[in-house]
Amino acid sequence: MYFIANWKMFGGVNSLNSLDKVIKFIKSFKKKKLIQIIYCPPNTLINLMSRKFRNININVGSQNCHEQKDYGPYTGSVNCRMLKNAGAKYVIIGHSEVRQSGESNDLINKKIQTAIKSGLKVIFCVGETIQQKRKKLTKKVLSKQIKLGLNNVKNKKNIIIAYEPVWSIGTGIIPKPLELLKTINFLKKKLKYNKILYGGSVNSKNINQLKSIYNLDGYLIGGASQDPKKFIDIIKKTYI
Ligand code: 13P
Image (cartoon, rainbow, N blue to C red; front, side, top):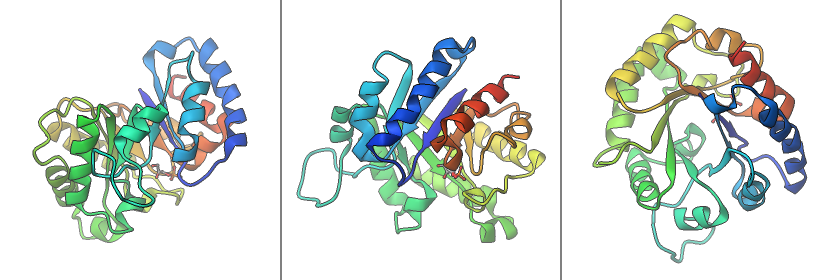
């Protein structure tokens, strides 16, 4: 199971102290071989964080990347080569918060191609808005995001899919179990060999409900991942 922490635009150097609790927990966790934890902090913390996790099986990722593989005159941008150099092994691409600021499926596709070529593993986010859900367009939207996002991507082995319904992110609302089960099954049929995660308001309370979705391969966790106790609780409860 994957437990991916997306810190979004939160956290400074002092926030790294809170990870001591997570490191201590993992060292003594009996099921540690069954899980993969990935922290995606703001880029400013990638290097320090990857040093902190040097002796433990926790990986670090970025939350976005530039689509160009090489260095270039793109003020404010960071490419995969730089992220890798800083210690990242993963990169989140296509998060709805980035899509909302104008990122197209075509740009997402370019970023995915570049990330794979650069040797980063990709956490590819897909999900429908509330309006699309109300119009029963979920499957259509997901199919399109996947088709265009993965267009001409030959090597899909290093891609993890994160299904994040936009209406669930930061709202405290999660999909009904049967609905989620069906959507994950739909994605599994499309992408037989990829891990499929769920993201959107995952917390230490609703994890008991979410873990009943047997075909999920893990969670992409926003708000709750910033608090080590809540994050550890989510992992523990997944295995109770
Ligand atoms: P929340 O867990 O805060 O709803 O965020 C989910 C998310 O966007 C993870 O990428």
